[in-house]
Amino acid sequence: MAMKSDDAALFWQIRENTEMGMKAMETLLPKVEDMSFSLYLNQKELQYSQIRDRARREMLKEKEEGRRPGAVSEFALRGVIHAETLFDTSVSHIAELMIRGSSRGISRLWKAMNHCENAGRTSRELAEELLLLEQKSIAELKKYL
Image (cartoon, rainbow, N blue to C red; front, side, top):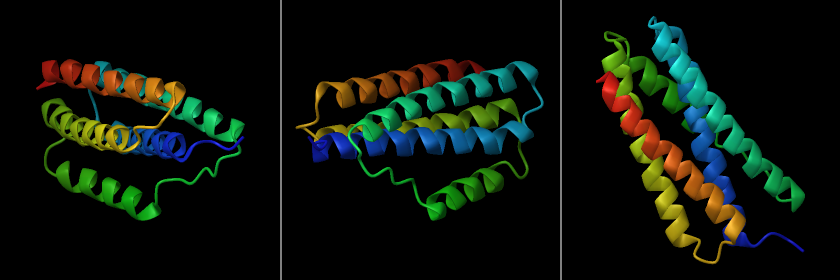
């Protein structure tokens, strides 16, 4: 049986959010000199990849098309990060950028969850797990401000 379109849309949004988070971490890590903050970023990247991989597995189980976020959005993300950190690579500034990014991710995920009201338990639970991760990240990042 094919995956319901609401499940597929929600899994895709989870993948997009996590992949954008991972790309942000990859772009920010070379700019961070503080070892504890660098470790924190690496841990977040790992958490994003674990959630992304679970969404991918669910999509593959149902032979769902596994499209990826576009190269343009990835390029734009990297460009914004480079521009925003051109003159300020302090931990405080990077934490602020990450809080903004996580907030946008939360908004996109809530929007997808509200539009995908027929999504099943598995996709909803994974989306909620990602929401909790993002909310926890924001709370943790506030101590770096």
